[in-house]
View (cartoon, rainbow over the protein chains, first blue to last red):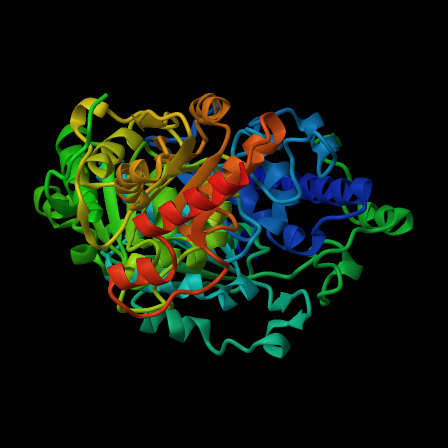
Amino acid sequence: MLRHKLHLLGMKDLDFLESLTTQVRRDILRMVHRVNSGHPGGSLGCAELFVVLYFNQMEYSLPFSMDGKNEDLFFLSNGHISPVFYSVLARKGFFPINELNSFRHINSRLQGHPTTHEGLPGIRIASGSLGQGLSVAIGASLSKKLNNDPKTIYVLLGDGELQEGQNWEAIMFAAAKKIDNLIAIVDLNGKQIDGSTDDVLPMGSLKDKFIAFGWQVYEIENGNSIPLLIKKIKLAKSNLGLKKPIMLLMKTEMGNGVDFMMHTHAWHGKAPNDEQLSIALSQNNETLGDY
Amino acid sequence: MKVYSNLGNNDTRSGFGEGLAELGRINPNVVALCADLVGSLKMQKFINENPDRFFQVGIAEANMIGIAAGLTIGGKIPFTGTFANFSTGRVYDQIRQSIAYSNKNVKICASHAGITLGEDGATHQILEDIGLMKMIPGMVVINPCDYNQTKLATISIAKYKGPVYLRFGRPSVPNFTTNDLGFEIGEGILLKPGSDVTIVATGHLVWEALEASIELKNYGVDSEVINIHTIKPLDEKIILKSVRKTGCVVSAEEHNFLGGLGESISGLLATNYPAPMEFVATQDTFGESGTPAELMSKYGLNKDAIIRKVLKLKKRT
C-alpha cells in the first residue's frame, strides 16, 4: 500500500530488499535448526529492520574497521537475536556466507551471542547480558562528537530488555547530555521469555516515558513493513542534530514470516525440528540462494 | 641498595589525579568519566584543563562503564573514576561483557579501595575487588603503593592497549618511591634485599613491609621486600627468584586473603617451588567504621601484623 508513496526507492530496489528479507528468514531458520538452539522469534521479527539498515539506510564501508570513523555504526543490545545480525552481515559481505554454517558450533566466530572476542567483522561489542547496549552506543556517539565525525549511531534494544535498570541511566544521560547523533530503536514485539511483556512486567506507555525523559519519539506502527521502516528512519535522520536523542518505537511481530511462530512467545528461544523447518521454509522460498 | 624514607605523606588518589592531568596534556585521546565523585578522585585538574574530554555521568556506574566501552570505538582511551566498591562489584557484569570480553581499552580507576576508606564503613569498603578483577580474563590489575607510584602507573596504563583495573586509596600515607624506580606493568620491584624471608607487598602495605623489615632485624631476621604493584600479570620471576633464596614468603595486602595477591603467590609457589607461606590480609570478613590506623591494626594489616606473621613463619621453617 505504501509502495506508491516511496518516491526515492524504486520498485526494483524494494523488490530486492523484500527478496533479501525472505532469504534472511531462511538463513535464520536454517541456522537455529542446524544447531538445534538459538532465538528465531525475535530474529525473524527484526529481519526487515536489519535489511533496511544495512542495505538501504546506513552509510559505511567494507572491509570492516572497529573504529568505523566517518561511518554509521550499529549496535545490537539484545544480542540473542544474533541469527538475523549474522545473516545480514554475511549477505552484505562482512564475512563469507558459508560461515553461517558454524553458528553456535565449537571453534566458531559466530557465537551464540555476538562478540568481538573471535574477531568477527561487523561486531563492535559483545551483547547478550541485557541492558548494556544503549550505554555503549552513547559512548560511541560521544566519541564521534569528539572526533568531529558527522555520522550516526544506531542501536537496537528489545522491549523486555527495558526492564534492566541500566537502560534508564542511559536514557536519562542521553537526554541530559543532548546526544543528538543517536537513533535508538526499540523492538516492540511485546514478548519475552516468560510470556507477554504485559504479563511479566507491564511497562506502561513507553512513548510517554521516553517523552518525559526528554527524547524525540517516533512510532513505527509496522516494523515488518520495509517501506514504512525506510520512511520512519528517514524521518528520524532528518531530526538528528536537534539536541535531543531519538527513539523509534518499532512494533514488530515476533516470528514474522512463519505462521506458526507468530502471535506467541513460544519461539523466543526454541529451534524448529525437521518437520517444522520444512513448513517454515515452504512459507519463505529461496530467493538469493541458501548458504 | 637504596634505603627508602618517607618523603612526606600524601594520598595515592592525588597521585592518580596528577597522573590523569599529565595525561590530559600529553595524550589527546585520553578522556575521563566520573560518577559524582570528582573531588574524591582528584579529577578536577584534568577537568579544568580538558572540559570537553570529561563526562560527568552522575550516580550511574553501570552506564559509565558502558559509555566508556563505547568511547573506545573511534580511538578514545577512557579513564573511569569512582570508589573501588562501585568500580567493581556494582558493575561486574558490565565490565565483564562490555569491556573485558569485548576487549575495550578502558582504564577502570578505583579510589577508596580497601579498609582504609575508614569511617564510612563496610558498605563503602571493598576487600574483594582484586579477586573480582583478576578473575576476569585479560584484565590487568594494578595496586600502586604510594603517591608517586600511582602517578607513574596512571600515566603508564594509557600506553598499554587493553582493559586495566587501577586500585588506589583514600588516606594520606608515606610517599617513598622515586621516579627513577620507574613503572613497568607486570614488573615487580625489589625494594630491599634479604636472606631469611621474602615479604611480597602491594598497595598501602608496602611501606608497612619496609617498616617491618627494619624492626625484624631486632629479631635477627633479614627480610627481603618486594613491591608487587601489578597483581595480574604477576611477576613470577622476581618472586620465585627471591623465594628460592629465602625459602619462605609472607604476602601483605589490604584485601581479603581469598582472591588477593597472596592467593596468586601461593598458586605460583605450589606449581613451581612449594614453600611455607603466611598471609597478611583480611580473613574473609567485612570491615567496619573507624580511622584507617585503627582498622589496619584491628584487621591485622600493618607493620606489626607483618612482623607477627614473619615470626610465625620462621618458627615453622
